[in-house]
Image 1 (cartoon, helix red, strand yellow):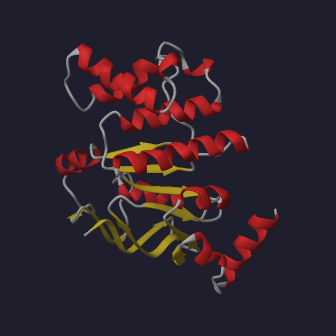
Image 2 (tube, rainbow, N blue to C red; image 1 turned 180 degrees about the vertical axis):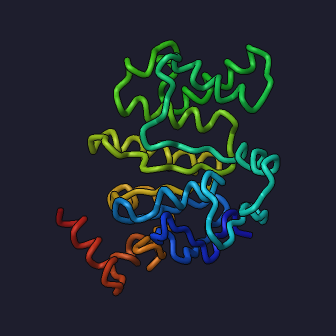
Length: 245
């Protein structure tokens, strides 16, 4: 069974279509990267997945359970199985790194202080940020904030991790480091992941499968090599600009 199945998903805002019948399937343990231009609806797709935006029609199934129209209680339970890595890390400026992770954990689970701290430090060690536990976000570089954002998404040991433009604003070396963390996470824990990006290089590094979103539809999917040889005009144009740009 696929971990995630999206069928005929539609969403419009103010009469303007954004998603026009998206079809996607993600196998358990797979890393799928959705590639597309800025403003193509990639973030809307992720928000529909976690129930932050209700689609106009279509189906989203996670581990066989329909997400669309799910009652609030069931939706909240489902969200505890999903880690969401925000584009801008979305850390609370008034909290230390440890407090940012602990706050997220406390919202979902009542744990003894010692157990809570153990989990927080374990996730910070995974992303290489354990030494920064007492620092505030303003004291961290953009890349370090992204690492902390990933650690926070992992505190509930999710089965699914969603990445919203995880390397935006990073230099090439730091971007590669963040990508390597995502690869390592899938390899070591078996999580199912969806990342959205406009970076072909990031998609090449991380994806088991790449899906190309254009004008609200998935126009092609496959491995990097398969898409590089794809005959679809938009895919050819995207690869040509990205590989020569």
